Image: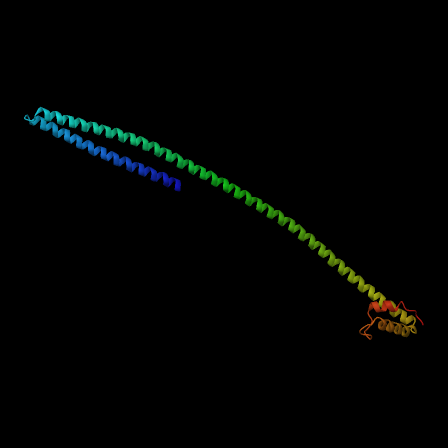
Length: 214
């Protein structure tokens, strides 16, 4: 847009300068023609003008005509020079616009390439992260399943220990008092905080290790 505006302004300036010079030349041409015409009438109707004055007038008119021709030639030369300068400036502006457009396209291509690369890297990172999250979720699920299985097995084992100790008490009722005594002594030796706390499955397992009778 700015290149078109600059070229248009250059054309307008060149046109104005050319028009001004042509207007000046045309005005001086009309003035010279009127002067020649009026001089011709004066020469035809005045027979008393001295020959020297007529010759001087002719010399003056010839000089004026020469000045007019010189002005026209100079004007043509100036126009030619101005056309050459205008053409050179136009070419420079057009080339500048082409270079600017080329540089802009190159910059846009580089920016688009970097954006595509960044998007691809982000996409790859998302894929890797998603895979890692899926693996972590699988590992967590496996750990939770294993913990649940171990907890269930521990409950079954604790129940089995408790049932075994109860069976031993039924089979050997006289040994229960001895086991309770030994277990109490063990709690005292270990500085157990609550000596009268109910037995848990582990306590039953430990009690089974004591001799049935003293």
